[in-house]
Image 1 (tube, helix red, strand yellow):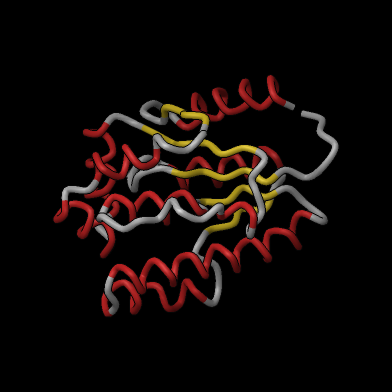
Image 2: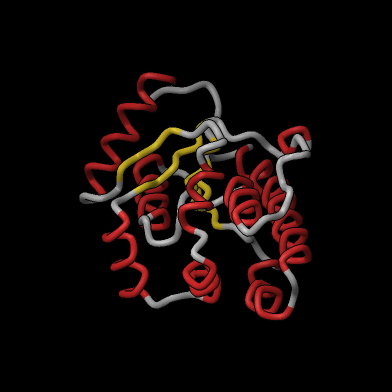
Length: 185
């Protein structure tokens, strides 16, 4: 796959869809850097913030982590492509799903815009099995308790992303991504 510059690819989606597994596999395939948000030092504070702050403050924490990630990714892109496991859309969609107004700022005026954003999807029963198998995070428990998954999906649908079905095996999903990338690059 020939391209003129290093690529910034983002993988978004609900928890349990296989985003992380896909993002890691894609980064290996492309010889790209795998990058997960929230980045350091935010990742060390995440559980504390999630458990001890209200949603408005959590929203600002996650926004700040994306702004930091954007700056870190800009530096990495000088040498290598990046596959990012969640970026701005997860922060916006989750907080909008719980009732916050999140779409009033043009975030891409302030942060790095991805070359490609994949929405990793899978059948809901598969997603829930994956979640329970890996163990529920604090945020997974909140999403289940507040029944926000459908609202979360509705918010995600407001963004322009290429949907990849990850219900099967990872090789099939990587093939879907490769076909899409060949067509646009």
